Structure formats: C-alpha cells, structure tokens
Image (cartoon, helix red, strand yellow):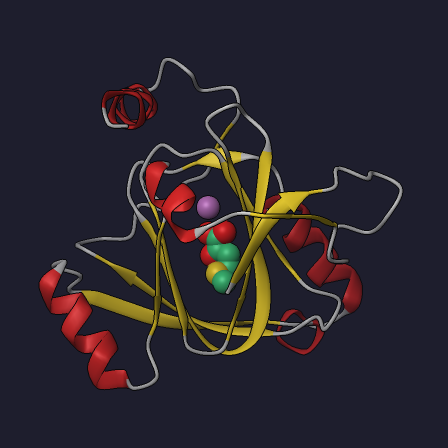
Length: 175
Ligand code: KMT
Ligand code: NI
C-alpha cells in the first residue's frame, strides 16, 4: 500500500494514479481512523477477523469480464466513485489485482491509498470515501463484515447522520 494526496486533476480518468507526490504516512491514516495491514496468509486474515469480530465474508471480482462489458463496469465504478459513507466499517482484503481507496483528510482533502495483493484496509464507519480500480481494470477482493453487511452507500452530504457525527467526534477528540 502507498498513500498520497490526490492531485485533483479532473481532466484525467479517475483510474489513473493522480499522484500529487505528497506522501501520507500510516500514522496520518490512523489519525483519521483508517487502518492498514499487509497479510500474506489467509491464517493471518482469519486471526484479525477473530480479534475484530468479523464473522462473515465474501469475495468479489471487479473487471470488464465480471461485469460483462467495459460500459457496465464503468457504470458500476461511477457508483463506487461517488463520495459516500457507510454505517459500518468497510473492510477489504485484496486477493489479487489493485485498486484505489480515496478517503477525506481532516481538512477535507482527498488521500489516495493504492492497495494491491495482500493489503487489508479498514475504513471506519462514517468516513467520506470512494473507490475505483486502477488503469489495470482488475481487482479480486474479500469483503469482511461483522453481522449482516450494511453496505448501503449514503452519498455526501450526510453530515447529520449519527454515524457521521460519531466519526467526526472520534477523530477530533484524539490527537
Ligand atoms: C465499496 O464498497 O466501495 C466496494 O466494495 C468497492 C470494491 S471492494 C475492492
Ligand atoms: Ni464504500
């Protein structure tokens, strides 16, 4: 995983790197509640799932093949790339391929985390974020969850949402 500030260039496809060259450290990610692990075996994934009480999981492939066409894929990616929150953690373990998770910094800038095979990323409930494939157009990812998946995307603005307010509180209290 590498994290950096997004260059915010709207003239270039969102699947390109958009690397501003300004690095973001793991501790900066941690200060906004984003956790990162590199896990090379499924046993390590199982262990983390046990510790954090993730009882269930499934696996998805996102690619032109899995969605039937480049157009169908693009339609799905446009949805993933709309800025949103969830009322639960978003936990993704990359089995193969790569992708970008963009998350908002404390001062509302886009931080881009490029994830690849063996990366596990946890986004807290209430964080504004979005997802896209890279220009490789392929990811296979495990989605972990506690009980039933609560993956309804609530698109920004949802500043009065209870989970959003709790998240904002949680990152302002510490550090
Ligand atoms: C999400 O909720 O944004 C996704 O599931 C994206 C694909 S997981 C690599
Ligand atoms: Ni999401």
